[in-house]
View 1: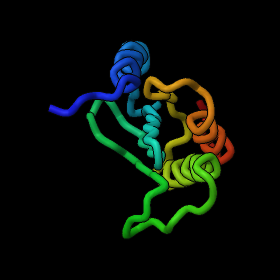
View 2: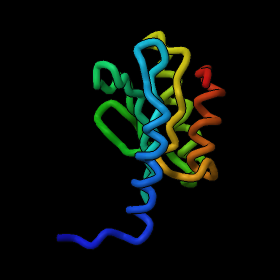
View 3: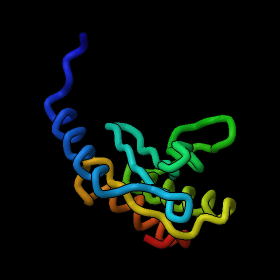
Length: 121
């Protein structure tokens, strides 16, 4: 069994406590942010149907081009990208789930980019 890093377990505990209060519905889905050491990911989830509606990250995929710049610049671009994808699916309002991370740095930049892109939360 792999050893968990010392910061991973407390973050999961914080995320569980946040999830007790934050839930996504069909009218107002949940925007979740996951931050790794190299990349950042965002998903919009409908918790009532247990479905991922939209997702974006700074990774290169078949449908996505490479995002350039520092990690913080890429985080803001991911926020703009998720807002653009939500607009295509007629999603205007979301609930922000910071995933147990502090609302600081790259997590806040994703939220800022999503707000600039037109999402309301």
